[in-house]
Image (cartoon, rainbow, N blue to C red; front, side):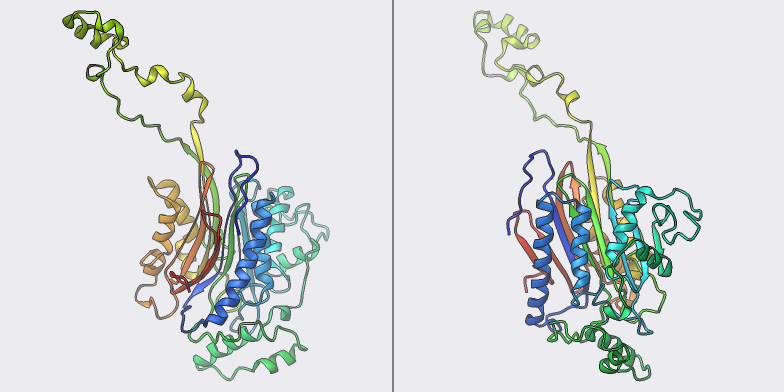
Length: 452
């Protein structure tokens, strides 16, 4: 699937990368048939989103569209496919952030149960922020369920009944909590609790019967038994549009068997997601070394008419007697004034893995800060330092690494330097579902470090 170039050569080439979760995914517990199912789903979402960017859609529209499709697919730990809490309930989280263009820049929502697509709720909260009040008062009052003109006032993080009331007032599609249930996630929930010695957990058929037959019975990947794999991953998409704006959109059901009320890194600015841009001084143009006048082997016609002694003396002072004309004479003296003195750089990232570890490190913002404030650092090297093998996330687990899932995870991102975007990613665990358009315009999809 070749990537279309913008018709206007001054526009930025769009870029995209999507992830579908990370953790203890191995060839032993991910059969080839299951991988084919995941690969097909991810590539389909990638193609649809890439087409949006190629047609001129904003990064915000493209990224939230991709994550909406992931939320609708029961394969992934978000929306209709989210994991259960320890109490057997669903509590969803989502976030969105742009590098520029909206006053709030980034927002998060958590403890969502009855909104069909939490990412659309996060998007609405961001967009409506343009008309929010700037204070922290009571907004519109007088029974206004949306809390005033914009609804969420100046807040960038809301949860539970408050944010669900906003969703209802904004006309977003609502659902029963059981809409998000799937057999596979319930069996993971049951297996995890019983492995910890909990009392017998009702089976799926009994649970589904109590809910009046709601929930998704099969999701098309029944070959993946997932031994020793309890999802703690997140889905996310990072886009760069033709106008140079970055957007990251992220959604999750959280950790399998998390305590009710737990809020992770996905809706928390700086921890599981981040996007920003900044101006930095343009690097000085370095001229190649030039030969000196006296070393030139080319003489001017005038020089050949003079005695050698006079010629050597004059050549040292008068460049026109030599065949070399200094580059500064040929340069446009106003060229430096015509070029901008600064260039714009940007970074956007989405994380997946053990959210508590991302929270402790403020992982996404930390990676962006390394690129922005450390000399000569790329986002790729920053993500490796934070989320790569032996990186900060892994070290944060200490002697618990490899035993509890703590510290496991990965990050995807897009780096922008002077209008040129680069897709980057790294992870420290055994697998991370990811798909992207590479530099040559080809659609790629991988789960391990080598092709599967």
